[in-house]
Image (cartoon, rainbow, N blue to C red; front, side, top):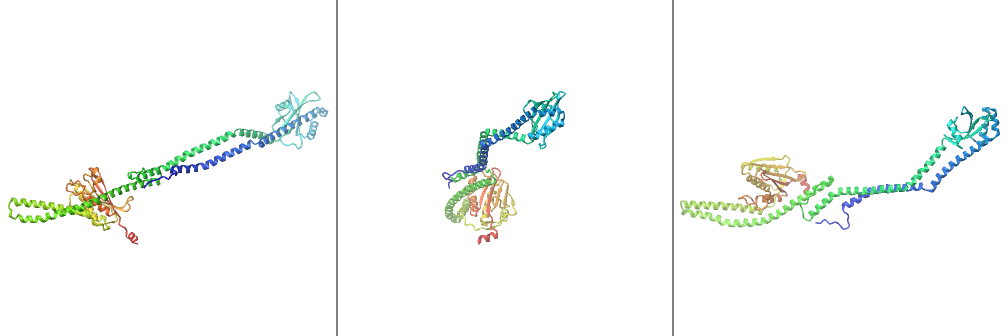
Length: 528
């Protein structure tokens, strides 16, 4: 199995970066382009000759209108003050006659108002104040001395919403007076003229800033692009890093390195995936170990078959010769006869021991195929504890109440548990506690029941822990090295597995995990 990247294909991180970059840039660039276009159109509109001409024309028309009114005031004022008729009216000294005269002139000359002030005690006071009948509202009732002085020094002056011109008059008695003529411009004309001028100045400034606005829009767009790229890379890196780590670990596994693991990180889905990968590699390591163990067992089975055959062939004449030798001891007496009988007893015992060893070899080599049936695990463990209760060490039971039956060969499972208990009792020769426990299926082992055989003996040294299930490997002087190998073979043939945990000086725990027996409903479903 090889993980090969297709030529020309982009990595996951590159694809994620491009995807996030597209998602970030499409709306931002659209807004930026629209802003640049809008600024450009606005600036183009501001700088268009038509708009500028409209502003200039409006201001020019306003100026011409005011200038024309000023000329009219000057012309009308000169005609009124230089004519003999005004002198005759003034000679009467009556304000109502002067007022009627001025009212007629207002109508004739289309003026809005006329005020006549005479000097008195160093100042000016109103003598006749008149307005045309159709003049708009807003005519001042009178003017202050400051306004009158300003009007007398200039051709015309804007005072509030009125355009006023002042003309000096010498009365018949040689006193001085002032005639004010004016138009009412209204409350809207002057603000409108000022608004037009302000708008023209504003758009001229905006046109000057057109290049600055374009550069600002381009700068904002550049900042958005750079920020989007950095954000897209950071986000893609955070999402793809767990995948990259997992791919790297998978490549190690693909070349046979089953020690490869990953440190779960990222989102919950990636954490679950990485944990599952770690469990898979762990299972692969165990499967490889079991396969190697099975291969060694198969090889040693052939050796055991040969050894069993050779031992039995060699023992048969020895066992047959012992009775014949005993019959020939009749002519011996005393110490000689006893010595020969003791030697024959020793030979017989060693022959029986070799016979048992040959039987063990034969059993290991010719272990029959299992005949699995549903087995009550708690009942079997309790029975085994009762059989070994008088062997010496204290035996404790820790049986879970909700353990389902297992699908295994009951006689083979009994043999395996007997071997484990025998090993534990041998390890507790100086005293200790032997514990037999059962556990129901768990989340990690949802389809297996666990049987634990624990002792408080000296434990198993780490350097030999991986070899204890090998055939003919033993640390006991009288052991055959087949007990644990037979347990491992039985558990494996019955679809289970066996694990060992041990710390020197703190005992050892052997855990058998056996498949749960199918319920009646599941069994019917399987048969159908």
